[in-house]
Image (cartoon, rainbow, N blue to C red; front, side, top):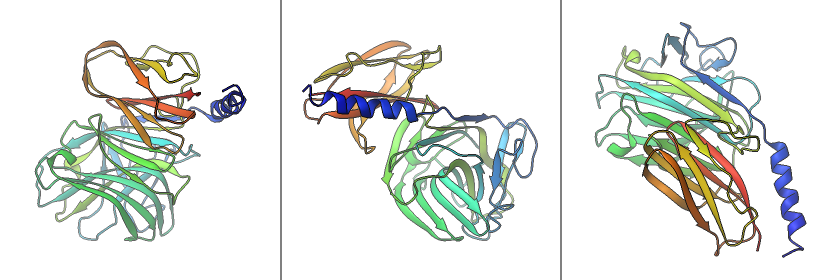
Length: 323
């Protein structure tokens, strides 16, 4: 066991040093077409040319796809350089739902725009709560209309309605989609190792109703404390994920977390490849502090990550299993 300790601690320190905080939060306070917010966004129409733009009025972002030309989704991607592990989350606006109209809200991860090219991952949900609803995870390959479906899930539980929270993460090669804090689907893809988070909207089968659906808030994180790995001092917040004890551990350790209000929470464990190896909590939890025991008797020594998702907040910490 002692021979393994230097190697494990070395890897632990390297991940800590490479982590950095990056967060972008907006409630769309300005009226802009296309959205810019001081140069923080690029758009599918103005930059990508073959797609369409996202605009904002106070408190609402919507798309401007006409509904007659397929796959010209309204697209807005954040600028700057982002860490590879990312999350994007938003609050849905949806009124006058009509299943004959394909209104989709989208989250983008590891995405980029350039003239006649859009690449990255899109997580899309239909604005519907009927059996016609769906969630899809796709990879945009560049030219308009060139995409690959990685996962498609159909049914009322995969659609969204007004006020729902939606979220998507990519950790390593694993893309995960959530609705109201509940994991709905995953996909694995190795094509894109970098790019930026963003949002989008699709319209098909009707015209002129772009303002019926959109987002009222948006949050993106890249290798940030609430999406990546927390290493600094803990701060008061609505959701707090504590450090496990003991750490390193063999084979069991205790994980604590705190939520200020009751609601749905999911606490899960991932390996270095982004594979989910255990689900410790997945359901309604009461407000307050909770402790969960994790036993890793069947797992190999190494670094693991435990992640808490509650509402629009995701926090992740690392731990070392040392046998």
